Image: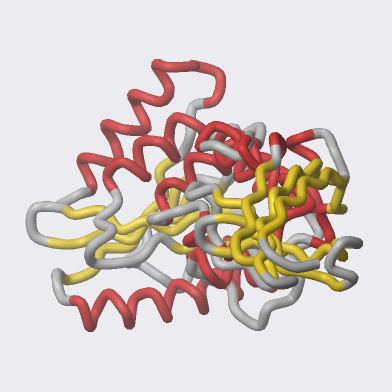
Length: 278
């Protein structure tokens, strides 16, 4: 084959054979006219390389196990000079679909409810995904900050403390302390700012635990020490129960929920919490 030739070919490629990277996906396909495999890239600037670890979720969201590709290859002197490829399935990966995949991914992770033994009781967002996922996955592909993950967790679960957690998440002092996730029981640690002190707040997702509050001096170093203390406390509560702990710590206070009073009960809880934020 000499001179210039244009080849057009259509074929399907399984999702598992695709590689996701920044700005698109790629694969290799044997082209009979060239008698060899050539690299093919389909451009989509919504795609990031972190999606490769969860590409099965994209396949499920699109309702297919393979993508259809149409490729145009310009050949000059028996060598491909340009390769242009398109795929309707890859074109369909937009912001809305990515949000759907993110939501399904978190829902599936939480649905398992088989929390692994991590050796730690307080987890950052990265550690949370590492604990719940078999895949190596960078949560930055879906989330820019922990509060976004917390919002999704509230949306995909039936929680007794939805309004309480929404309020705590909105008040969390994220620039001082990263939001912490607790697997057993599934819960969150927030940092709220009072007039003279910070306050670490522990709130569970769906167990009938009271809200636990620990005052902390407005000092980053002391916040770190307080986090270590709270981690020890949660381990003690899991082993010995909350009664044994409460009898030994006068700095911790509890705010009870008023489940039977609906929104009025939430307002009571909120007022009592704000009265503690000294």
